[in-house]
Length: 72
Image (cartoon, rainbow, N blue to C red; front, side):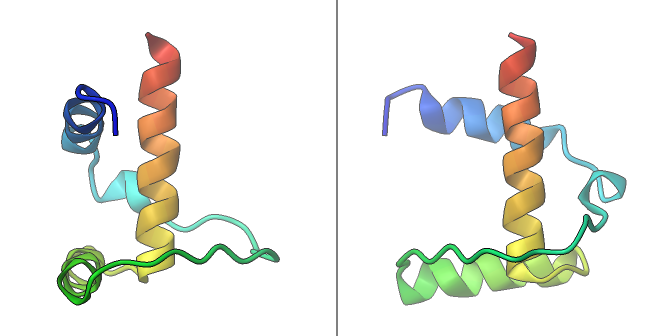
């Protein structure tokens, strides 16, 4: 990961509100990636605290982060 990537992601994530994380349309493709057990638990806990499934949380985080990066 580039040195400033983590900072950019943190800045984008800080701007996310619960309203921003509302659901989107139907999904027909799959994405798989490996994480540690601790990362999985953290993702699940964060998503659950927002009332979302992990996939919904990650997709919204991606959408919001990429939108913020496009603004620059």
